[in-house]
Length: 126
Image (tube, rainbow, N blue to C red; front, side, top):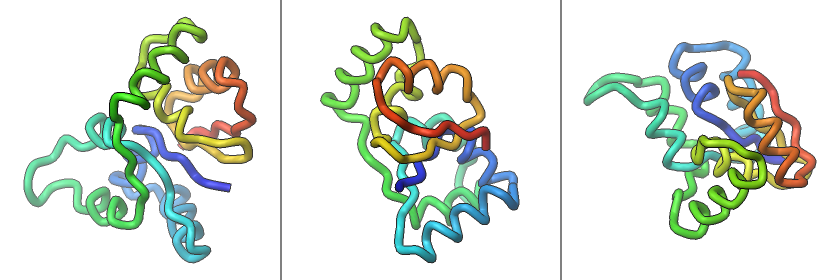
């Protein structure tokens, strides 16, 4: 099982949410890197140099994938199926595989995208 992080989870990390930090520590201790993509980081990172130290620290232990042409095309197709509009969320869903868990602040939209994708993925509010 992989933990996939949406922007809400990254914001929770920066705010020092103890539940999300405990999940990160658990995953890293088990040798598993939480997964996200660069677009999610763009949504969550707002600070300049010297800001968002918690988030910067946590990102070092994450598997950050590129939101490249292939993932973008697949995300667009998923949005069409789900009648959605957020390419960043759609790409988060596409990173997840059956049995994974997505942490997000936007559970409703993510659940619709998961249903449209046909994946068996848990969506948890971060």
